[in-house]
Length: 183
Image 1 (cartoon, rainbow, N blue to C red):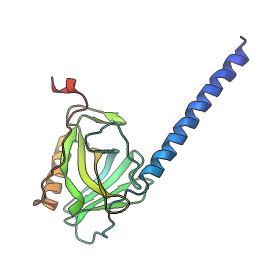
Image 2 (image 1 turned 90 degrees about the vertical axis):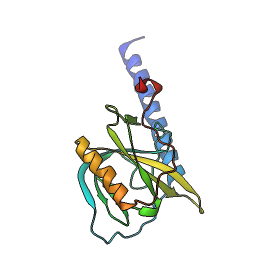
Image 3 (image 1 turned 120 degrees about the vertical axis):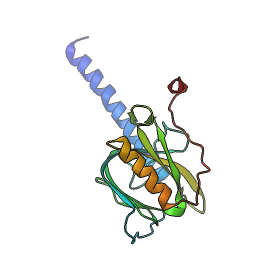
Image 4 (image 1 turned 90 degrees about the horizontal axis):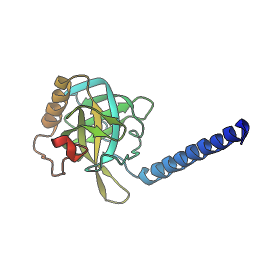
């Protein structure tokens, strides 16, 4: 086999891989297109704001390796997060702003990893919430954020608790990505 044939085979393999990736992403976006946080038009002053936070991903609760393509939270990037008494506003760079009402927020947690990122133990803050699905169904989700310091991470958790102190989470928590992390 000469070099040109070898090169053409590898180009065909790479093209096939990228094609399958594009098809899979399009299917995921179609599957999750009906998910949405209820837009509420946050008008009150924020309890806390967090600028230039690393947004990691949104996953179903308890499934850290399954990405959910919620409109507004589809892609990893920098985000501005504002916690209000009425809810949470998230603006990921290049995505439309989303607002999650306080009655949909279920609490916070921490994790070592999510799809797309693995860090030190409890290095990712999780916002646990419910998205509305087609009809009257809801889906329990976790959106992961990587803050610059542990103090910012604690301030985020405190702001979420202050926003909705009555509502306690009834969702299962997942603070690690593997059993080996507990050792």
